[in-house]
Structures are given as C-alpha cells and as structure tokens.
Amino acid sequence: MASRQVLETSRKYDGKILSVRVDTVILEDGAPAPREVVEHKPAVCVLPVDRKGNVYLVRQYRHAVGEYLLEAPAGLMEEGETPEEAALRELREETGACGSVTFVGDYFPTPGYCEELIHLFLADVESFGETDPDEDEFLQTEVLDFAEFYQMARDGRIRDGKTVALALRADRNH
Image (cartoon, rainbow, N blue to C red):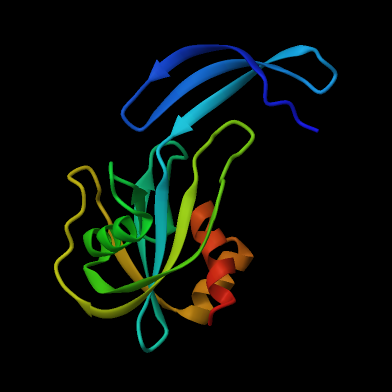
C-alpha cells in the first residue's frame, strides 16, 4: 500500500501555469524519499464534431518539443470555471465553433511527477462564429473526417497525448 505521509515540502518554483515542489515522503518500507511534483492547473480538451462527422483540430507550434502538433482544442480552466464552461470557451476561442459538450472522462497525463488533470469532452458543433485565440496563440484549423482522425491517432500521426486520449474516448461514442 502506498504511503501518503509527507514529512516535508520545499517550494522550488512558482510560475503562471505551473509550480514545482519537492516532497519528502515515507515509502512503504519506512524509508524517506524525495518526490518532485509539478503543480499544474486543471485543463480541458474538447473534440468538435459536426453533423457530417467532421472533426476540427488545431495545429500549433509547441516550443517544449520544437514541433507543430495537431491537437484537439484545449486549455487551462480559469478560476471559478466549471470544466463544461471551460470546454465551451476553448471550443469557441480556438475554432469559433458553438454547440453543446458532453463529458467523456478525464485522465492524468503524467502522474509520475505532475498532478495535472485533463477533463475530456466531445462537442456537437451546431454553428461557427469568429475565433478569439489568446494573444500568444497562433492556430491553424484543420478538418478531418472522424475515421481519418481516429486512424491518425492510432498510427502516430497525431502525437499529442490529450488528443490521442480523447480519440480513444470519442471512438466509444461514434
């Protein structure tokens, strides 16, 4: 059984999106051990699908990996915002799509060192308006039919983890 006892916590970094702490924990055998933890705000990822079965993804440059990635619209939850509200906001901001969202699950992308939780949604797109991306977001929208999207997630052409996780959850519902 895993120990939950924390002997000491040391804050190492506090940033806009994430913070880092080191916890000294007691292991199952009673020995103390350091555990580095990235504290990350909760996020949402939403897969917009229209009535024809088209999926709307965004391509954007991700500095940490030095590549343009194809992703489902996603973003951090704002203070006091529900996951559903955040999903609808991100959907509109990044694709201009309006519609309803359905929660299909959540997951921890990197639980070995990060506490981030991403809430996953499917969106039934009813109409499109203007996009309103954050000022530091430069997005290109790409439209795929659902079968192509799912195949790209399976064969590795889509490499963004949250989008692959969403493809697995969305496939159950299509």
